[in-house]
Length: 116
Image: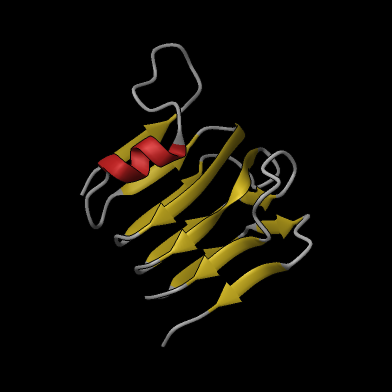
């Protein structure tokens, strides 16, 4: 298990959360530096996604589709610029453990639970 850091800094290997998720292996932890990340994530492996600071400072403008066991901490999931998504957090398979997160701005559903 390894820790993968996401930052918009010049020397950062991973500037998007999506690229860190693609690189991650089961059991890895992704730590996201404060900032706004305009992305829609599909998480299909058991990982931890964690804001380095508070949810107010680590913002995912888009949404997350969960298809495995995932832990999400200290991230705000909002709908501002990504207009074609109506669900903040969609759990399609597995389970999602969500701690200290905020989900707001979605016209449809903030959290959608589907599957078994």
